[in-house]
Length: 587
Image (cartoon, rainbow, N blue to C red; front, side, top):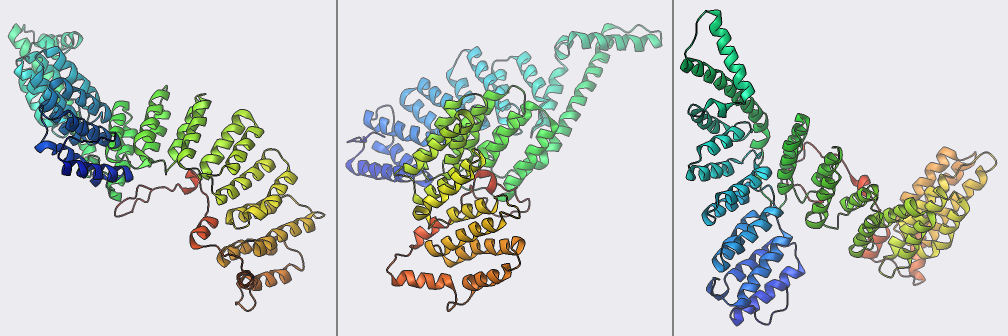
């Protein structure tokens, strides 16, 4: 928000709003701070109206705009904002807010119903009102709880005394599995009795029913009067409608189990219970198995209002949509909504997946820009840097990938322990892609003095040496190289004894599995030096000697960085626990 000298209120109100704005800017994820700001702005000058000062109105609008940009799924606040604009500036301003709100939360039955109700009261051109109702129906008409909307649509056509349109609406609704399907069918059935036959079924079906009635009469050699023929045709049509009712009833019953378990069908910033997520997963499984594209999309959109802060559902929606034919633009829109509004950049997995999608579509520069955007906010995100380097490798060759690593290692904003991980990735690139073992080994040897305190550096160096192919002639040289990595780590690093023991155990396993006749002698020496009491433990003595020599030990915060592990999204991914209880974390 701009730095207004006057927010439009008293000095005391202006100070309060300035403080609340500072709180919001300091922690934009704090929902309570936003609520306080909105309430304070609404209360300016004793309550805003069309006679309020321009400064107060600007303050209110700016706060609402920022709030709803941050939390676009709060349909109640869109309604409040529209009401305020109606009172301040009239129906056109209110309509603009409704349009923005319905574009932000396209499947809100409540918001569309409120918008349609507003349009009914403020617009006297039926075609304009009906156009809005039809737009709303395309977004929310299939919702299991869409009856308030359909009731509003029927109410409008009742006001217009448009019986034909009422019947047409009911004829659509009786096919939709929804909460209050039965009462719509009863109204439809009653109205059908008074509608012309031509309105009830298609011309082909009407001809078929008439032929059946004539054939039945012919069996008995009678000629029925026209009224009796119409009565028999209506009976057949009524029977067909009852079949529709039974089908809708069956489809409704299938969904009732899942619908009954949805305890919070709206968006909120607080966590959901695990059992709610489990129910959404099962409901989506069911609807996907049913195979109706429109119903599946409708359910995903509903789910992603309630579960928008859980990136698993954005991943799932994008994956499902990508399996449909010719849906690249729909997939792109799913990713865009996820990364621009709902999934924080601290969870970069879906942004990287979006970048891979754009790369697949041939939009290489867009994919590069996405990686750069992540690193602007998360300069130490190893996964994003490695992903970017491999994007360059795929599209421009090995040297381009190495340039990415060079740039990040030289960057002053990248943490030294992140750089240690990048050096190992560079080395593995030289080994796995270029095929140069010597260049890869040189990368480790030359950088050990800079990154000796990185657990990841030593782990990858050990991994590199252990995976080198050997034979009877080379085994002794191979063993010496592995042993040297361990010796260097024990003497040069300031890692905690626990981490040195963990890496040392890797070498002990090597001695057991690949060592020669004298291997157990070295095994027991290493075992004693790493796991023995302080009087014989080399790592304990090394720590004491460093302390005595005045070498600084790693503080707790640095030690945590030095010993951290680096994972990518797929390494951290686990299937959801079907028996999980309690609140489900967003992470």
